[in-house]
Amino acid sequence: MMMLQTTSGGVGGGAGQVTLAGIRSRLFGIPDTTVTFNDNAYVQALNILLQQELAGISCYRKFSKATFLAAPQFCDEHKDASLHLERLVIANRGIPADRAASAASSFPRAILEVCWAIPGEGARRLTLTQFSHFEQQLVQRYDAILPDSPVGDAEVLRLLRDRCTRRLDSLKASLPRPF
Image (cartoon, rainbow, N blue to C red):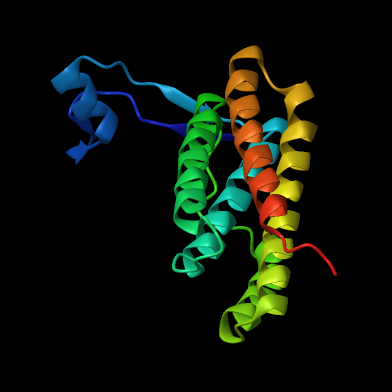
């Protein structure tokens, strides 16, 4: 648990010192407060999901011009999910992650870079397969966090999981059939 505490007092915190708390107190009538940030398992799980969604934005953005993939739409959906997750982290008194998950996205990103450079049916299949695996991991993470989530959060998390499931179904449907 992390705490931020503002100092009490008016505009001057003592010895001619101006504090943010003093200014807020005087200008807006906001009392001096202590803000506590939680870093519990639930907030950490939300942040992991947030990092995964940020990684999704990065990966889909790379393929925004691919005709066989609805990358711009999927990228926008991951952006929207990231905003929802940021709000959930803050609502649960956490500090949102600000970077994409590096370990989760580095391997698929390396494969996707190769696929982007080498056009063809094999590269298309591998690209769609990698994105399918990525979305499947997200669905599993959402399923894992749902039982521990508060009622208000569960509704948002179910919505985000359902979007992942639709993307996954779309990606699987786009995969070319084997011979």
